[in-house]
Image (cartoon, rainbow, N blue to C red):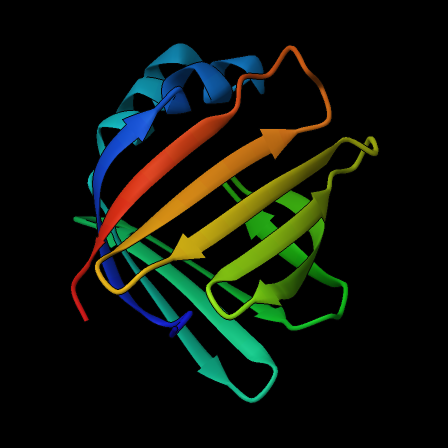
Length: 136
């Protein structure tokens, strides 16, 4: 199973609620929740590049398998992340923010889709899921 490819977001589950619980302002969370971005994941050796774009919105993260790196997400929020290949169809990114909060982004791939699950150590923050269709 390939953990690379191009995917289009079809729907979100608890994503808006997740963003609000993280402290993202309501109007920004609503705007982000409404986007239907294309997510492209490429691999070059140990480097995995995650590129998300929708209209004027464009975000790129370059992570290194099994190595802790600095990453910028959302609205210029700095975190430290490590990506691990769990099995042939699952990648997991563990991230820690500036005040030691920890989150997990799990990417589960199939021939036709990708499900991204977003969790946080703080149990008051709901688990979010983003459902993508594989384009290539």
